Amino acid sequence: MKSAVYCAVLLNVALLFTQCRFFSSAEDADTVVARVNQSALTVDELEAEMEATALSGASLEMRKDWVSDWVRTELLYQEALRRDFDQDEETVRELNRMRRDHLANVVLEDIAADSSLAVTDEEVADYFEAHGHEFIYHEPELRLSVIVLPDETTARQVRNQLARGRGTFEELARTRSLHPSSANGGDLGYLKRSDISNVSVQEIVFSLQPGQISRPVLSESGSYIFRAVDRREAGTLPPLDEVRGEIVSRMLRDRRRELVRRFVDGLRQGADVEIYNGNLMRPEPIAP
Image (cartoon, rainbow, N blue to C red; front, side, top):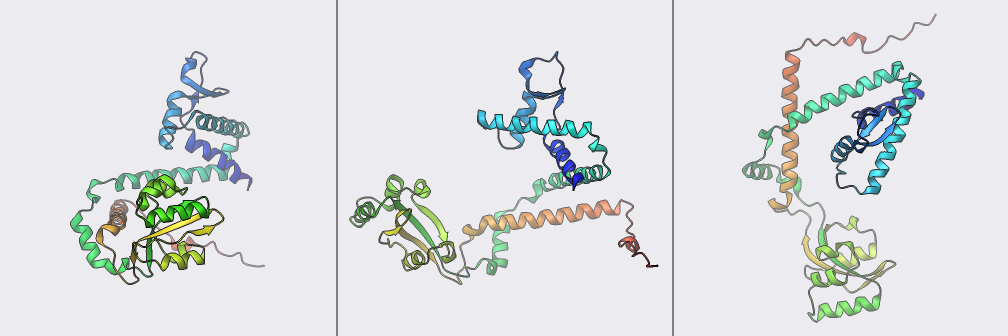
């Protein structure tokens, strides 16, 4: 357990802070963000880390927190080195294993970046024709829109506006709804019954036909008005455009696997590989 903790500290530094370098007093202070003894984190290194972790637009406070974490980890790392924990046999073995796995994954990522993996529209159509049964809806789904209002009185007013044609559902969702979906005109996408936790709401919305609008539905968080936009019945097949993204993902995944398999087979054929099955299990000691 102790070695595992030490290894975690060293690995954290190895993966996140390998670019920090020794600090010289002759360096321009404007190029250094933080220093722990003789180890420094430079502006360029910080920017590289922000870019690598998709935090290039991070606020000043987020950057301060990140640098605080760097300082904390660097302190622990230097203490680990002072105690010679980097020489611990189990820690060295674990770090070597992680280094091996990381570099192996770098090779796999490089292989997967092959442009020949691109999927054409014709291939997508052929896949859909051959595997269409895998995309059939197994239960009804309802595409819903919602307007959430603070109380029943307001909800009734808005419901009357809709009934009298004084604004579309989308317009009123954008201007009046308290729900996060208001930016999209109240669109919640397609939902199954199981996606709606309240059984009473399930019954109300799944009784709607496309185009119908529900009466206000009260809850602790406000008053809801639902509109059924579309309905998918169980056993029906979705249009190709709706599942195109999933098909492309499947095909790219399969192609990457096959590409990796062929690549590794080629490496194996050119290497001296031996497996000693007799040594897979250490023999049980013979009782005296």
